[in-house]
Image (cartoon, rainbow, N blue to C red):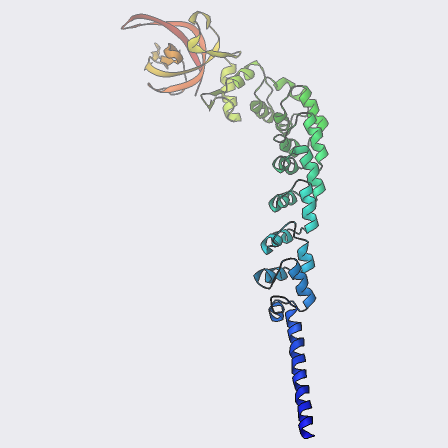
Length: 371
């Protein structure tokens, strides 16, 4: 009887141990290839959660750890599949940092904006929705071109169409908007053939409208702006000064108001105008009388004149353009031999002198302005 009871007790113990082992193995093995402990070390506490991660291709390891750092579960991570096919954490992270959801990415892509950098660039321009970005792309075709208009202060893409219709482009809109000019105002200037790039400059200088500018239109734009600011009205002489202002890259008359007034006062006493497109050394000496010309030349020999009373009049032989000599006199500032000068001279016909080659007859004139 005792033996029988012991046998029954032993059998019960074996069955209990086997059942426990079976249940443990069953609980352990249902977690898949990885053990329950490996999942739980990664913060996955239930079989159902592990199964959901496994279904989207995520197993215990570095990638799961990084995704959970981004506060994603399997369901939310799955939404990133189209954007980041391998669910790489760095790919998802860059979008999350931009505040963009998987659905947002899809909408931006449909609008024609593909990369995260492009979306970020649009957002920096305060274009925060894919719908608005699409409107801009429809009109400007590219983020690069849209940027000019947006940074100029245009918020509605449809306004761009109106500006383009009157000839304003992405390069000129910034100055136009900075001057707070309306489409109607700009249109009025354009009707009078004023270049768009100059309109804002003229208005900022004080020209209220085209009628205010009309008398200045024959003056180079930068010089017209200066004259307006100096409160000087143009005339025939000033027009010719503007035309001949830049010689060999050097500004003769309009550098500043002081230089201008000094030059103008000297010229105004002697010249009705400076003859355009004609160098003094290229003019027939029989046709230069009492006319003012631009000249450039090197002093090759000083020939100062001394009066009976001892007064010295500066003069000299000058080698002008095309190697043609002329005689310049009555200049007021220093002009040394072998020194090149630019200025304005008033023709006095011809001058003759004797040289080793015999008698020479050359043009002569009085220097009115010397630089």
